[in-house]
Image (cartoon, rainbow, N blue to C red; front, side, top):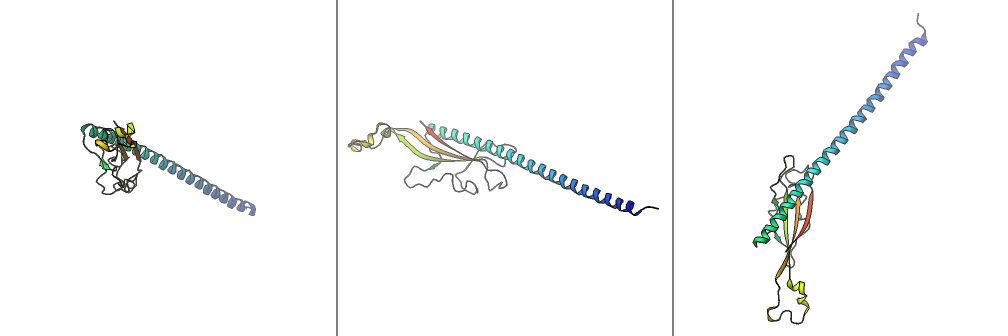
Amino acid sequence: MKSVSQRSQRGVSLLVVMIVLVVMTIVGLAGIRSTLLRERMSANMYDRSLAFQSAESALREAELAVRQAVLAGTPIGTDCSAVGASCPIPPADTYTGGANPDWVDGTATQELAAGAPQYFIQFLGQRDSTDELNLGFSAGANQYGGGGGVPLESFYRVIARSHDPAVAADRSVVVLHSNIVIK
């Protein structure tokens, strides 16, 4: 015949095993959650790296387009040189996307990227020989046709983004900005 103490000990061992099992389950779930968080973080860093490379390729492509246009003597980009021209940095739809026709699709699209990289060119104006020689400060600066000089440098601003955010809103958007001076 079994004593009362043996029966109660069997119940206690079952209770201890159940508590250990619950603790092990909680520790396992915490480990899985931590692993999933790390995986998401590394995927986001990878996506941002791809977006940065796409934006940089668009920036380089736009700089080349500006140089070629200036050498050919053709205008390029939005003219921000006029008095009162509104040319915000960055343009209003940079992070939201939209149908702004001034964004130009780049040609260097990566296979895993969110979309085609884009660039936006703004013409900021020219510096001419009047500025170089300080002719604008003399008393006779505007007499005898001396109102303007020979253009020396053209100033441009290029804003590039990794893709149109309206197309892939759930992906990282990287925006880069560059100023170009062409002689």
